[in-house]
Image 1 (cartoon, helix red, strand yellow):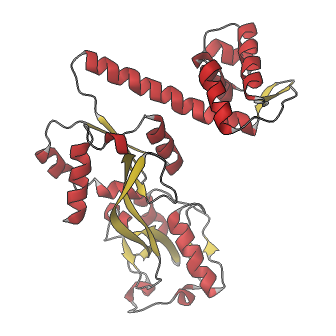
Image 2: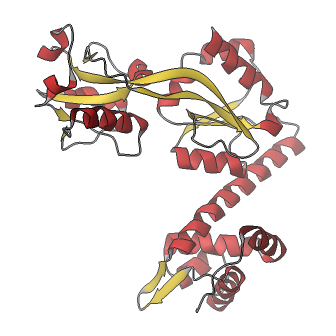
Image 3: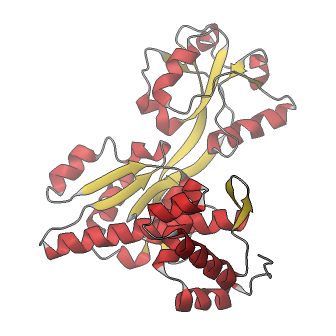
Length: 313
């Protein structure tokens, strides 16, 4: 299609509220997964001509091309990716709503849905026995996910509370409460010669190879900032490890180091790894909880109060 630029956000929002249908969202979600109109139509149980009509309606409604057609199928555009991502959030939110309503009709209380980044699991892992003791009737469903998925889940209603680092911008209608400070530490394998030193500087580790997380990770950004002050980039190890429990295997190699959040140390075997005596002045954004303000006095209140009390202890 020859798409015209979309109008302003508020006007487009009103247009979506008036004309968008759930079938549009189901189709765009299926198309993003299938990249083929016939297979997407089969996935949502409609005919291919009906799918073609729905897609045309959606692109006309938005004034944007969502897919580029080619001989072997369809290629999603950037606008299509944005819409498909939010369509998935909306579909998951509806699934959560349906589950909650079904449980309500059956006289059951649905579990509170908690999402967390890997480092923030340390906020709940040691506290679970005490939480169970204080609130034996409280039901929780805890999952790990990326920050992007957590924020989308909270805003879309699929999650009730998320545990993560303090975001640069708190979503509208939400509250972030810091629970624990954090900082970057550097690990080496047990018995490494550097672990016996009383004090190290980053320049002393110039020959080391580093197991680095992706650039958007907070601990990677802290390490990059430290190396920038030394005007020398780190040597990168060939293996990237994002699961703390796998780090000792890689750190057993000579001269291999890894930056990790201090909050992740409880997931590592202290007999296999050691923290190097580096004073890098590398604080990370604090770990805490983010939730919708409107939920603060509802079923979520006992969990929020418990986590606040645990942090203050």
